[in-house]
Length: 455
Image (cartoon, rainbow, N blue to C red; front, side, top):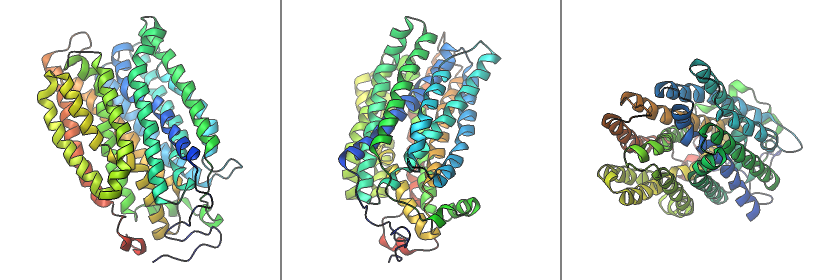
């Protein structure tokens, strides 16, 4: 059963009306370029900033891990603020597009500063903390509006899932670019000077990311609108309504755990390659395998989830992934076999990453059913908050594992190498099972839920 359409918007309370002009192929593909832009900065930060802190800026591993966690939690608090701002933004450019246009250059500048070291000791630690918070805040100003755009672009579930797939294609291409280009750029641009190389690499990626965000803003037009009375609803009412949407809570919790896993893998790849596989160049292979699995997953996931259902497909993939991770322990002596199993594991374990934007859009539609309001910006901000805290926690857990193992950049002991292996392989195994349990809260695939007023 669905409620009567709203006179102001033409939208049904429980399900938005069909799009007046469904997004064309260019807009669908163009939307995915935003995640390519995002990953040029985001994945570079998660994969290389810890290494930059410990091996270039000469910060202690425990100090670096604490900066990553505290800084990411601090800037993640900004996400709901940005989300509320998006829900209240009304400009000739739209609600979300102005942020992509005007905040993208700020993100590029902050990204460059994060890969610039200043002084040593306390000075270096303070500089790292301040610039890390700054780049996180700038990322919120761009990424929250970008993610909130999807339910504004289309109300069609199949189109959303397809656009989520395009988005993950962009993310995969970003992962590939980071995997194959970061260290070669650092070495070639720096001429052997890692400090200068990382800074100049950040300039290249920052400029490229800004241009890509502008392409998204040019191609994508918002079509699903809000009525004026909903736009003016009090902030407190919007926040209280979140607690009634358990499906949104389930998606956010599952995403939090998923991004802890992602943060652990990306932060740990350079250490695992060098100190466990005994091959520093395997860093690129590990990240490339992760990127290829993501790209393949972006193509396979819509097909799988349409047949198995979103929740069931994601949970099955996570359980199989946990089993495959257990098989990785004895394979560190065989890099080729390790990379093959690692790629397959992350392909199956990545269904949730690919489907997440579509899941969040589903919860926004459901939110309109139970609360009479959509709040795209606020609900997406909750998901963004989870991804940021999760990624930071993953990187921090890995850094603390380094400290527990007695890691020293100039001489890596057997105990440190063992800590690296357990953090890189064992922790993701456990996290897959926890993420599968969190998905039990999401259940928007049964028609009966559409009319459930208390869920």
